[in-house]
Amino acid sequence: MKQPLTRSASDKMIAGVCGGVARSFGTDASLVRILAVVLSLFFGVVLVVYIALWLVLPLEEGGPTGFDDLKKMFSGTSTPPSDYR
Image (cartoon, rainbow, N blue to C red; front, side):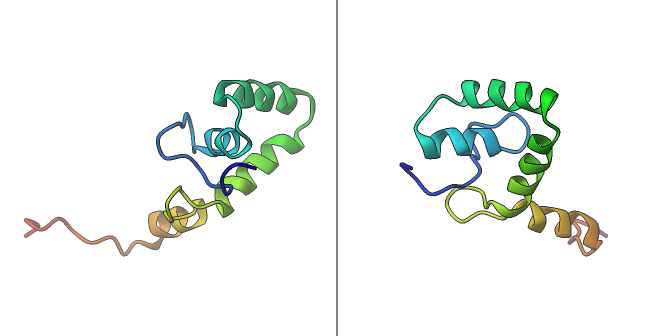
């Protein structure tokens, strides 16, 4: 592995998992994406692994995990805009 396993913030199509895996293993992100799609057609567990990686892997440089994003989305404690009246 060249870098720690994180989700990519810049090289992403859905959640950045394939981009992060590709960067971590030093390969092309398109190859990882194609491999993930083809394998998910034959083995459903690949989709489950993708979702699990999205939930637990942080965005690069210490960003939030997918689980953190979900908590923020469903918590209902969003702050109103500064010009909210």
